[in-house]
Length: 211
Image 1 (cartoon, rainbow, N blue to C red):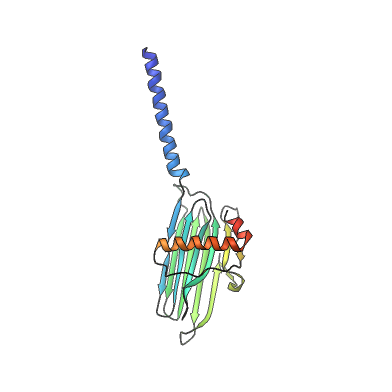
Image 2: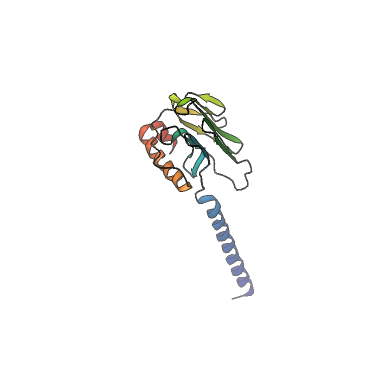
């Protein structure tokens, strides 16, 4: 083999190795599913408890963000559920943020949740006030995207964060019972999967949104 052919062979092998390394990095950071599961925050007293910022994002499926409340004499139940579409997260994207805060003093409680992706925000705020005896709900309110909503008209909201001007769409659907106390990210992820199946079976529009 001549010196020139040896040089060409070495260059060819080098190019193949560089290409292989480049593909490995691409597959590692671009093709593998992005996943984020968070328990969020919670606050509770003897008669009253709230949680917020329970987040499940498993690309390429739409994300889920939800909050819960435990009222006097009742099991934990949902306060809201937001299903959202999002673009592929970028490793150098600094415009992402999460803020979850809950408080409860036994007579009133609130949860404030914010998720920011690529400069666009998802916001939810829930407040509840008990009566003087602390035995029943005096009033409760839900704010989505900075606007008060009628909870009797539905607690499920769809939003496409990839749109130029994202708009919340309120949907009325039966939310499944929360099977057990949410303590871990595994509990949150399992509940999210149950939510997906339940909602897909109830509403064709929600089913199409989650595809």
